[in-house]
Image 1 (cartoon, rainbow, N blue to C red):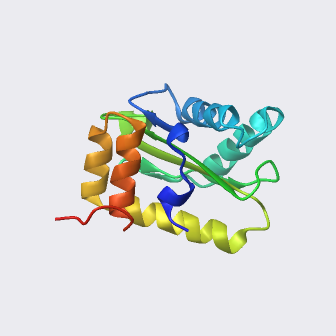
Image 2: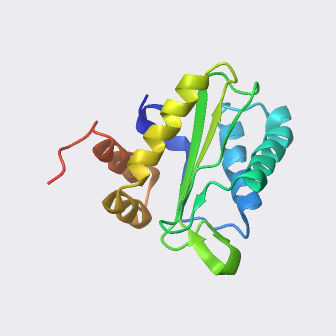
Length: 159
């Protein structure tokens, strides 16, 4: 399952910054609630799960400015994903290090293999320096999806 197969244009936030990881996750979860991918009554519990998991084992790759927080939860059916990109920082980690791309992934508990395969897909796409550069310069959700489709092999050929 490819990154852009799951990511809905409505779940992409471009150019927004939050004061912390926790605030960024809340913003992404609220977007998933707005798209009916996550029930509103599960927002707080899911937010707590993501934050606890991040405290136990950070998903921030500060060297490339990417974070892929994720949890498996009964609150979603299948896999839900929300993405935030910003030219400088969606949020900053310790010492002001910018994280400019955040891909939040929620999966049903029974989808262990699918969850891992999807995380791998997200990670592989975001390992591309060219992809990250293009995402940081994107000005709209549709542009973000076009970039992701190209980099995960679904769109136009890269030159």
